[in-house]
Each structure stands twice: as structure tokens, then as C-alpha cells.
Amino acid sequence: MSGVSLVKVTADEAGIRLDRWFKRHHETLTHGGLEKLLRKGQVRVDGKKAKSNTRLEEGQEIRVPPFKVTEHSQQKKQQAKIYVSEEEAEELRNRVLYKDDHVLVINKPVGLAVQGGSKTTKHLDAMLDVLQFDALERPRLVHRLDKDTSGVLVLARTVRAAGELAKLFKTKEVRKIYWAAVVGTPRPPKGQISAPLNKVGGAGGEKVVYDEENGKRALTYYQVIENAAKIASWLVMEPMTGRTHQLRVHCQLMNTPIVGDGKYGGAESFALGDSVQSKMHLHARGIKFRSPTGKQVEVFAPLAEHMLQTWKFLEFDAGNPEASDFSVFVD
Image (cartoon, rainbow, N blue to C red; front, top):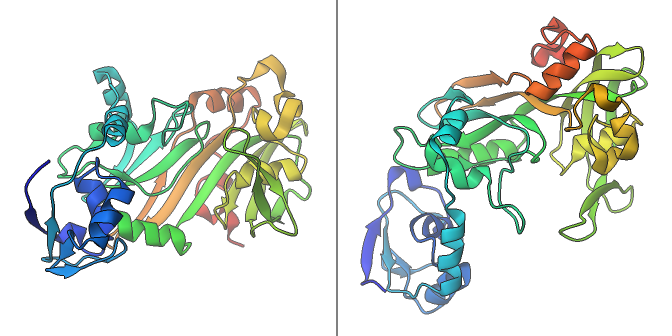
């Protein structure tokens, strides 16, 4: 336990919710514990009662009372801290594609989960300390990529930047393009697929399916850049909505599953055999957004090694100008 303290909200913290502020400064206080303190009036903002969703302003004073650290919350905090070797840290730092005072963009490797789970102990969120560099705060996640998807991932370097970037992603002011190797060739070779998607099953067996009645709107633009005797194709895609596994399911619905995506493509996704690696061939190639500095940021990530090998095997030209930037979907 600790004594009562009065803490002022900094400029970088302006606009965040009170519960987010506590999560940042007091990781061992559970959400339920915070709600209890708020109901009793022990947590106050500028001397007044507040709610967990209260938006903070620079200079406001937060009253932080004594609270107990439960064994469960302490264990969670310890589990969140994982050992990162210097070799791993250096490898992650070398994956930084863009950096300013507010934003980091990295090239996430295949096989690294973005966040932890019941069976995931090593994940990017627990390794972010190594990407703090000269900032006062550790970076924060603002969007996600599947564990087996490589490519551009944006991180916020301040609380304020996290809030602003989250709004951009929510209001669809961020453009993203993906490269994939798929089995077969979509017909037509350029167009869009609009197929509502819905999650089914539990946590362990959760899957996304086409659901016309209960699914959420999902729209993807796509274009074939090259194909190899119609056995496989290089597909560029731009998701206009952000549904879970959207690109993977939309490719499967076009009868051209992503190479290596056994979850949605089944055995067909491995039709290229031992000539290519069995890893999933989906890569977040580029992202375009406005940084909190006001600067337009456009970042591209080089292909993961297993996909580069497949491109060489299929004789695809990774430098093909048709797929080099966001103009691929501009008529």
C-alpha cells in the first residue's frame, strides 16, 4: 500500500480516459478495483468525483488513494515481463522502417504474435521496451496483424499519439495494402469482393465465416499483378473495412486461398507442395496515414524471406511498378 498522492495530467496525457491513465501508471490496479475506488469517491479529478471514462485535460490533478495489490494482478504484471535477449532486441530494432517523435513503424516478422494469449508467452506487446529509444514512454499498439502475417505495423510513442492514431484507424483515414501469393487466379483479375463476415466458435476454435444475415460489412479491393500458369498468383489487396481475418476469408471465398493458410484454405492452400515453405504468404506491404506531426507518412515493408523465395520460384518480379505504391487501385 502507499499513501495518497496528487498527480498532474501531462500534455501527452490530455484526452485519454481516466481508466487508461491508471492502466498506464498503476498496472497492478484492476479495472474492478478502480471502479470500486471511484464509487467510493476515493479517486477524484480536481477534487471532484469522476468516472472511468472521464476524459482528462492537461494540468488536472488526480487523487490516487492507497490500494491493495492483489496476487492475481501482480502475477499478470510479472507474466507481462518476458526476457528479451540482446540479439532479439537488436533484430527488432533493425525492423524499424520509420520513426518520428510520435510514431514508429516496424516490419513485423512472421510467427511473432502482436499480443499474448493463454498459450502465447512471447509476443510483441511484451517486447516493446526495446523500441523505446529516446522517448519518455514505451511504445503502444494502435492496430494488429495476425501472428502469421508479416509487414508494416504502426506503434505510438506517446499517449496522445496513441489516441490520435486510434481515431485515424477507426475513421478509415489510414490506407493499407497487402501482398499475397494465392493458389489459382481470381476471376475477374481485378475488382472487389463484398462479403459480410461473422465470428463463430469459441476462443480456441474461433473462425470467421461468410454470413449474409448476421455478418458485418467487409469490402476488399484486389488486383492480380502476375500469375504463374494460373497455378498461383500474386495478389495486391486493399481492405476498405477492418474485419478479423478479412483478407484470408475473402481469398478463400474467391476460390483462391492464400498459400500456407491451412485454417481457411485447407489442403488446397498447400497445393504448391514442397517447392515453397508452408508458412502463410500474406504480407502487409504498405501503409499511408497522417502522423500527429501533420506529416503524411507512407511506408513500405520488404517481403518476408519465405515469400521472397516463393516470388523467385514463381518468377514474380518483386519490383514490378504496378504493385509499387497505392496507385494500384486508382483508375
